[in-house]
Image (cartoon, rainbow, N blue to C red; front, side):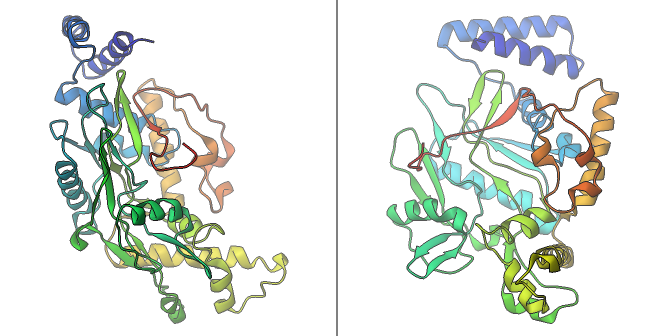
Length: 361
């Protein structure tokens, strides 16, 4: 499908859903066709980009939190060009989204990729912990090792802690990427403690409050926005059953089980399951006690059911990636586990991009 066809498809669905007239649709498509003929591309109007970003969330097959798709705030930053301007907009986004813990779903959209301009944020998430490969093993987050090494190559000073926040790396065109340290005031973190186990605090675990995805491309009407960081809020299991629990991440289950006095020699004791539940209880408890938005996986599944009902009422089919929609803990207790979903890709949408720093790209 060429650019004009993609634009036509997007404008038609956008304007119809926003109750615009057929005359407005025809006029806008004609305007876009002239722009493409003249310069080879076109620009979205402010309301088109806002609608496109929201609908891209609605179409995100891996996301269980889509009930709130129309509540996202869009920061249109298509006028910025330099790395410094991009970083300032990122900090503005983080402060607005964090909102002292009452997290607001937000997206910031930088200029689309063209022959003359291309911007990338190298970070997977705007807040992410470093991972250091040492002779004694990995310190910090194993999933960040490659990116951390690249940051050090670019001049970042390693601290060798378990929870060191990485710098923001921004690249414009083929320029040398620039590093920026996030201000502490923009990086809300939650110390993880347990409502019953006093020893839990001795583990010195923490996690950042806002998941801000920054390496995906937003595609709307044939235009590709390669820098468009966005956030919602955490589902507890993302932290408690994945980030802190996975063997190839922080791998905390053996230590927690040991502190609980459970026999870890045999899987028949279900020590992993017991430790996993308590870790997730601790995560939810800590976020709630600190006033930071979070949702448990049972509530999230109920919210997704409501989303499915609303989409059905609007005459739209719900697409989904079942393996991602089921929570990583007790999935069979949710309705999602027992339902098939078509993993069809509908645009607008968010897409993975090759890592600019990866040896595998």
